[in-house]
Amino acid sequence: MASLSLSRLSGAIRRAPLRLTRNYVIAPAKPAWVPRQYAAKPTPTAAPAAKVSTDATTVAAEVSTPPDEFKVSTSEAPPPSTNGAEGTVNGSDKGNGNGVSNVDGAKDWSKSYHGLATQAFPKEATDILMAPIDPLDVEMKPGELLFASIPASPFGPGGWGLAPRSETNVGPKIVSREYALVCQGRLVAIARGEQEYFDPAGIPTATEACKSNALMRCCKDLGVASELWDPRFIREFKVKHCVEVFAEHLPTKKKKKLWRRKDQPKFGYPYQE
Image 1 (cartoon, one colour):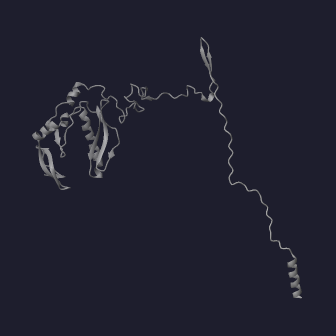
Image 2 (image 1 turned 90 degrees about the vertical axis):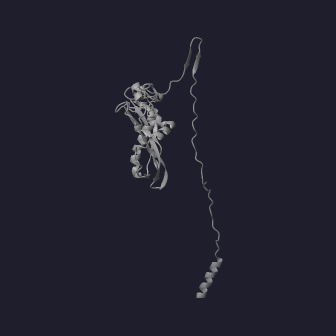
């Protein structure tokens, strides 16, 4: 019985057709990239040409009226910029010389050159500034640099001052800053002061000494102690009032010759005679 069933099954398999093929439907493939379609730009229309009349007596040009969005009323126009309460226009002769001024009319001395070389000072002030120096006012620094005490200002307290013209420049060993000397509301001189320092804690002191050095250099333009800028006067002053000695720099143990006044005591730290 079992053998009969197996024979019938094998015969049915042999009689059945073998379907080893598959049917495929080929569809058109979509492109990977489709160029974007841009709208065509409108062609600009040319402005209407002006019609010119060539009459023998008059020549008139008729142009199109501008649209309303391009019209600016006079009430919306900004007023001209002015300097201070006087209402002077920038760069005018009534300003501070170069048009630099604050809102309240005060001059910005960090940029202004107002009053420079416009008029000489009175003779009384000139005689005080250019008076011969007193030898007792002259000091000698170890670096062989002569400087004199600034005489009393002929302009009086509040009649002169130093105005910074730059930021303080702090280098590895030196501090410098530019100052302007202003006397009676006029710019007189500009100079950069400098001062050495050896410890970062001494930068504030060096900054103040930098201002004094700038004042000394500005006074040169006023003729104050002009002899100290003359090499011949310096040589004669050393022979009469100074002495050259050997001194040792204690931190570095280096010896060198230094000048000091004869009526002054021996050098102190960091030098030792």
